[in-house]
Image (cartoon, rainbow, N blue to C red; front, side, top):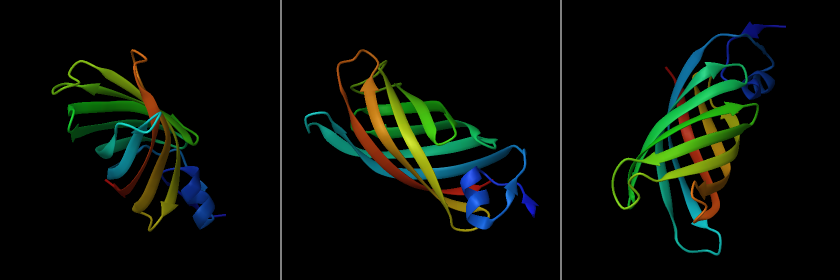
Length: 142
């Protein structure tokens, strides 16, 4: 069997290769939507993110700017699940934190491009709001 360094095991499965342990960095922009339990409010998300890691263990770092302010995103992903923390630095939600828990999947376009889908739930750290979200991003190997 051929061996090739790939982002996640999904790549290896799709292409028939065995993934090797080799740290990689990928960048992508995610577009999606979130909704609060009960239906309102809701909105769009637009995350700019960088993935770093190897095999099934990855870190996630990014930023977002929306109607509620500017925020930073940090998190980890193992296997097909992620936990991401969003901290608002400015705007209406300045100083507030949110947790996003998601499953993710990859669809290989090429060896250096993938479409990544995140789907899951979110919750304010103080428990005041929660809901669901989904997002899709095109990522490129750096």
